[in-house]
Image 1 (cartoon, one colour):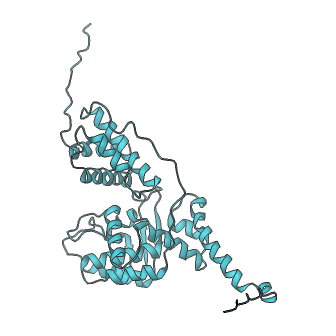
Image 2 (image 1 turned 120 degrees about the horizontal axis):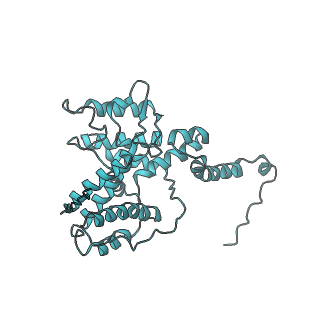
Image 3 (image 1 turned 90 degrees about the vertical axis):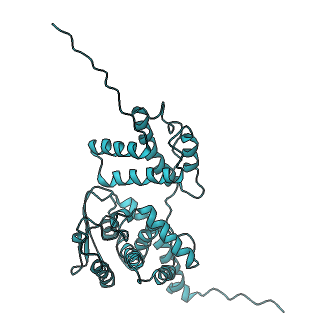
Length: 315
């Protein structure tokens, strides 16, 4: 009986990071990764190599260290970057591009409290007034900002919405399971003002753009990403004389204002797509502080026993 012949097939090693990224994403897709997950991988890998064009070399470990040590990023951002770079460079090492993974020595940072910033709505209005609607990009940015604060939709979910997934007349948008963080589809509802702004944006789209072109795309009809949208928002905020502002801040502001205006935490959970109520309850701490301050001002007992006025000192 003849023994099996083992053929040594030499692997075609990726020569560039772009080639390796394409293979890596195809491999992750074959493993069942969701489109949203693949998009996240691609965004972070692309961001890394654009900031460090020479990283596809022996200097890669030093570049990763600088990328993870960027000033001002949270533990969440640090860990999210590392969760992408580790499997990517493990894959690159297996493919033969590196003798070992340059990301293997890095560790996750200890978690910290979620960053929830409570911006005054007057600041949000300043940004919207500054953006305007004179060009396609400014109309897109205004419509996207208004939709975000009106619904609490995640930036990545909004940026993947197609025209057929938005119903202007019923004022709702359907978020596909494939683009949702929790892999569960849901519907979000918006106001007449938001509907009018989105309808205006859709009406100015070139006729040659089909349904595969997202509603909130670049001026050339290409898909946009969360990082680019955040960078754009921060530019608007700086020019308007405001402090740091991110795409996720609009989502957080929706939750805070929703509770302040009498909405309940259960419907908020469903609208924001939180998998557990505990995630939604983080916003209650902020709205409860509002309740506490309002009670201190309007307490009936406080009216019965007013605090004595402080006596003015002699001049």
